Length: 315
Ligand code: APR
Image (cartoon, rainbow, N blue to C red; front, side):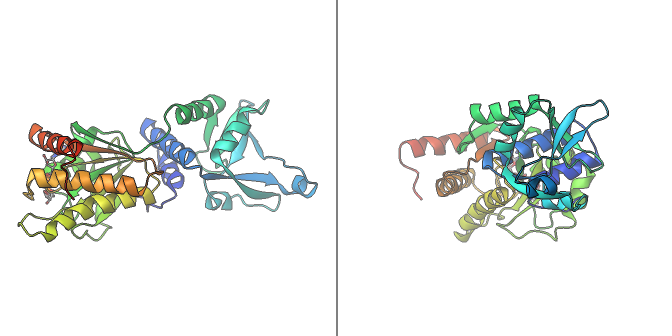
């Protein structure tokens, strides 16, 4: 089990090293794509000798079949294992490095962390596809409401309506744990529970989503203070997603099942809180999906959206 760090390439990469399969590769590419969108840097090793002569000589890595890749490291820590007195690291925006490599003759692509047990190679075709994706689908803020089963959503994070033990339960909590597998519970056991309105993050394991954000809604008793508790579930989940550089998040309808929160008010709080968060983070690019498991929840959200369009959605 991995201790999650906010360096999402290092996170995704360590799961890819542990097991190369379609899911871990998809998650690694999604992490690279998210950092491309954020203009994040990548660590590039350059030759010290060449640098001393005012040149910029990139370190290359030739594979068994003779293909030549330029090297890159997902983090200074990843470089640390191969640190030598011949190279230094320079940080450059990932998008610029991709564009530069595409212009290099005789170079097949980029190899991330070449000295690791599972070097991650990205051929020029993949670099081009990721840059094209960036151009075709600039990340933008948005909210949409859909009917569905949240355990099937292939996004950066799904949000679980958990209880304060974080040790699983029924409802969506049970469905998420069932779909993710035993490792999710093992990681949840390390989190020390969660207070109402708070949010904690784990890896998604066998789920299509990379991460699961667990939040605990209020058990409805009619107190006005519970509106803030429920709003905090959405607010803190979004803040945690931003901290982990995530750009697509799907929420279940927190507290509207076993915890008995009235659907209309819960839907209004969810929509208002998410809209206010997007307005407070206009440049971030977060795609929010509110997932309704049945028509009753879907109808509540749709009625609130209509009320908002008529300007009747009071704070
Ligand atoms: N996908 C999306 N939404 C779902 C799914 C699913 N697979 N399964 C249930 N839901 C919906 C329910 O229809 C409801 O609208 O999730 C919403 C929240 O209902 P609950 O899962 O009952 O969660 P909550 O009301 O917050 O109560 C939390 O229930 O399951 C236990 O361990 C959990 O103790 C905690 C309590």
